[in-house]
Length: 203
Image 1 (tube, one colour):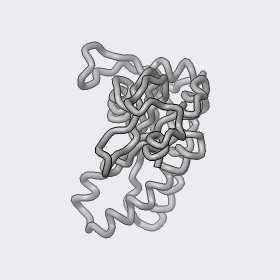
Image 2 (cartoon, helix red, strand yellow):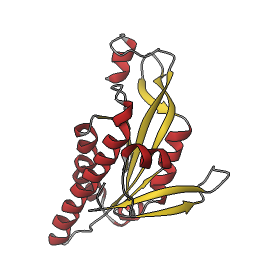
Image 3 (tube, rainbow, N blue to C red):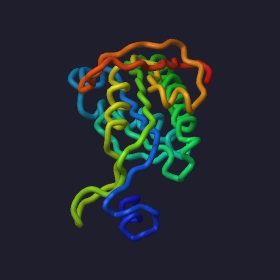
Image 4 (tube, helix red, strand yellow):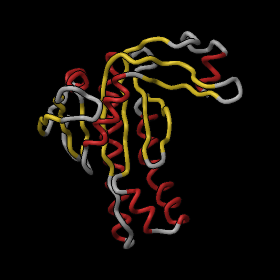
């Protein structure tokens, strides 16, 4: 729907794409692949549909836009409403709400004797290219660039109940991290520092 609005001129964006400073969030259900291998397809779909609202609703509640659903992972974009100074805070708040919602779901599933899957989250803030990609018949709005990849890699590093933030997000969101870590990330030449927030941690 955003892609259609961009093409119709309802968003102040160039059709060919433009650079914006945004916060990108990736959230992923941990160990979902082995879960899918060990359970019937119906159970996999039912479980995925239990987790998706817990991951998607907080993004929209915190003024973010859901860019895409990638299997058991989601990507959210914050700052498109020109509130760049607030984008990191919005993304971190969304991540915290995701962990809260997922933790409540995990408790319910444990009580029902079901596998309690957890979520890891990564957030990066910086310049990205945004615009409409695809053909006239099938197209979508998305963000691409280094900080999109950065957020995805941070998410890969996060464990269940953790949020990994790059330095710009940590600074702009004014958070007090649980700890700092140095990471060697795929596709990155040098190690990078990340701040770690945990479920129930303050910001």
